[in-house]
Length: 426
Ligand code: EPU
Image (cartoon, rainbow, N blue to C red; front, side, top):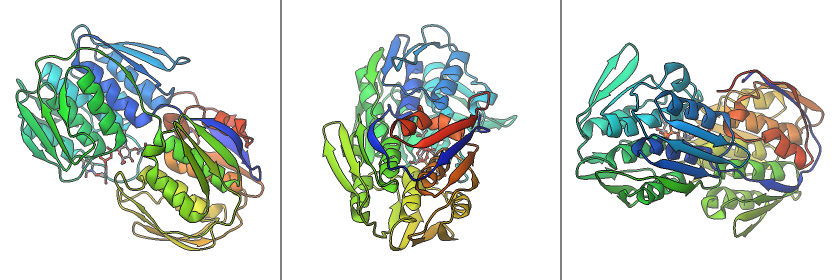
């Protein structure tokens, strides 16, 4: 799938309404939660993206009945019968979020045999935070034939201090401990809105989760959970992406369905750079076109500026006057897109996890390659600001995380065409 090629001609200011889909990184843990109950779980506002479809296939492979009405964005998951303990390796290795089935499998069947998860190549991305947490909850953890093998009779609540506030690490431990015996405290937990939404969903299913949204999450295990009808939160990274698209093209775009409360850091940084923002209930208006000023950026855990928006902000800063310094603090290898951006004319020097951007630069069309979801998005947006035509290769990464990416851009007036579409998802 990553073989897709997009052709983008720059120069059009984007205008209109960008509908924001439900959150990818909220969909994945919410889907995994369906393994915790024999009752149906109905998720609304589910984005039709490859990562959701692959996780749905994984759930199906372990015995969950899956119905996806993609048009209505409604996903029904029902794990009524026996559930298997071994998600298929060829699917698990397609996305990082696949590892989220391990916590629920331990809670439900006391065993999980899972390959190391795949996903974007943006750093080492170990799963030690997850494994050490599961061990604290009483699981035996071993490595066999390249898979993690975890076993437990029944998980027991524990005091778990995370070395790092890992997002899906926190989610996995919440999913496991909600059916454990006794109380679990997760200290140094992630505070991302997706974690908060998962806590609310687990409580809707009959769980007893408190403190989600702070660095200490407390879970009192229950004997059983029921189903849920749960609506996913808007994708704050997709919203940030379209905000940068509006800004870099000098346009005026309404992000419809966005949640401004989850976008504090990015909106404040955009204002500092010289972009006008107007926040409403479930909507944000982004207006570019004025002079852009250099700014320094730190990509850090929530509520700071998201690492998933780091490449996009760097791309925007190529158009700002002065020197901007961007520090990536979450992943050790998330500046790999810079070489591609430089092919479009950007002047960026990288030292370790810091990028220094000299601006403004007149970007020009070129042949570039996407490395992962967010780098592909950044290159597409750079192409909007470039003179001439850009061929974005490996654009299929976008389909993993953005629903109808090129259609939404085209609806706003971008000149974007899909030259080849590769066959399979992932
Ligand atoms: N880390 C460890 N050990 C672990 C887990 C993480 O050392 O066991 C390290 C990582 O190597 C990294 C840092 O901790 O340096 C942060 O990783 P985190 O675990 O928080 O990331 P994640 O939970 O695997 C989620 C999102 C990512 C997003 C990050 C950070 C999902 C499915 N993925 O990943 O999303 O970048 O949080 O916010 O929720 C994306 O959507 O493009 C994407 C990559």
